[in-house]
Length: 415
Image (cartoon, rainbow, N blue to C red; front, side, top):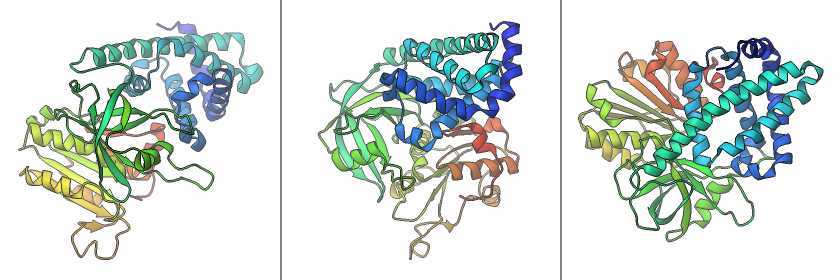
C-alpha cells in the first residue's frame, strides 16, 4: 500500500499536474525515444503524430492521481491497458524505463516546484501502479500460453483467403502455419499483427477478430486508412496489407487480447443486446453477434450499422444472412452520405445519424445491454444519447482509444 504521506502529496500536486499533463507527456515521449529508442517499436507513430497517444497518457495520469486514495476504481482501466500491453509484448523490464523518463519529464516541466519530496512521492506512486500492471500482465501471459492452442509472443499464420468487403475494407482469413489448433477467444477481442515493413520499421497493429470463436481460422477485416491531415502519412500497415499481402503470404500474430467482450452464454438470461457499429467499428460487434446467434439463436439482438454509403458499407450480406438465422435479431442500417439509389434500392433503412429518438423508438433501451464501437464522433454521439435516455453505465460497454473524458463531454449529435 502507498504511504499516507505519498497519498497526500500526490493529491496536493494533482491540479498542477493536470494543468500541465499534455506538456509532461509530450516531454516524456521525447525523452524516452531519445534515451531508449528501442521502445519506439511499441508505439504507433501515427498516434504520436496526431497527439492522441500523448493525450491518452495525460488522461490516464490525471485519473490515477485523482483517485490515488482509491485506486480500486481504476481497475477497469488497468485491465484495458494490461490487455493492450500484453498484445504488444510489454515486459517487467520495460517499467523502469518508463518510470525514469516520466519522472524526468515531470521535473523538466515543473522545474523547482518538483522538490525531492514530490519526486519521491511520484516515484512511489508510479512503482505501486507498475506492480499492479506487472502482476496482471503476468497472469494474462500465463493464460495465453496455457490455453489449448495458445502461445506467447508471435506465431506464424498463412493468409488463406483475402476477401474485399467494401471499397475500403478487406478481410484476411488466417490459418496457423504449423497447422496446430487455434486458441479460444472472447468475442470482441483483437489480435496483434506484426509486419516487417520493407521500408519503414513500425509498431505492431491491433485488429479486431471479425469472426466468431470455434471456426478453423482467424479473420481480421482491415480498413484502408487514409491520411487524417495533409501533413500526416496514410495508414502504413493497413495500406501494406491491402496492397502487398496476398493468399499464401505468412504474417506473424500475437494471441487474442482485449477486454471489450461479451459472453454469448449470458444472453440466455433474456436481456436484449444492442450492438451499435460505426464504420470499421463493426468488426468486434460482428464477432459478438455471430457468437450470440451460434450459442443462442433465440437471443434478442438489435444490430445497428452506420456507414457513409453503400460503397463503404461492409458485411451487408453477411449481417443480413445472420439475421435470417435468428428470429429475434433486428437490424438497421443508416447512411449519412448516401449515393444515388441507396435509399430507393433499400441498401439502407434511413439517412442521417444515430439520435436519442431513434434509440428510444427502435431499441428496448430500458432493459438492454449496449455495446458500441466506431469513430470518435460516433462514439461521443452514442454515449450522449444513452446518457439522455438514462441508460445506466453498468449496461454500457464500448471500445475507445483516448481519454474517457473525450467521450463523455457534451456534444451535438453528429453521427
